[in-house]
Length: 293
Image (cartoon, rainbow, N blue to C red; front, side, top):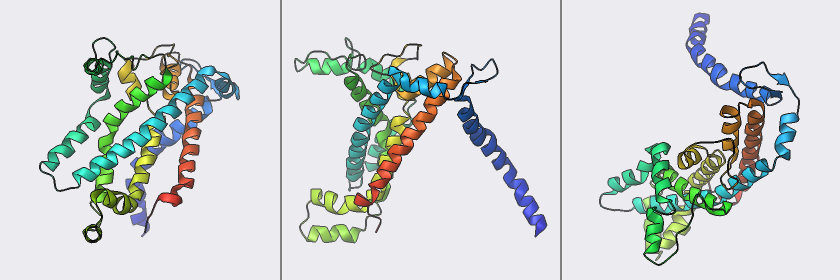
């Protein structure tokens, strides 16, 4: 028995080392350097709460939080709604259903660099295909991702993020819809329930656990948004425009452009606590609309 336990510890050792080296140590070290002045080249100098206090005193911090909350409030409902409707349609008896599933999932596996370049061109004020299409209806060209209004910029980027992530959410919801008992749907048809009533009164209540999962995952990804901004704007400079600044851009800039690891770590931990509070808030209201029975 002891020999079996010995070999068990040996076989789990690589996994334990991996967790300690690549998960626990980075988390603990980032928490430590958030209280220091550290530039990757010199030893960390303890500064206490200076980085945290300075972060809260910066206008850029509050602007980035405003932007990311607006981004999440636009992105999460849109992605959840479109993913739910697409999953419902693909769950019907359609021809070439597998082809449509593949088409909707393709953006998920598309690299952000390629997708960002294409969408940046589509959003171009002078030559973009979106403004060209609007021009057919005599609508003036719109500045999308370079607009002076932060709300327009966040809404534009949220639309791109929906295009990128709706396929993954659709797969989760489609898996839930395929487990809806056919007997329940047939009973609804006998009672005269139309397709819309089946969707809202039968399918939706049954798949609310999957909808809740999609909302949670979408919210976390919205607050952690980074690749989409890097892909659309082509890089991060020392000065980030107020219309497009979000917390992870600040973390990246402070870390790898300005080499200020202390403030970057403080910002990362603040973002972690913000996501935690938002998730707990969603968890609090879960029992009011999610049905597990």
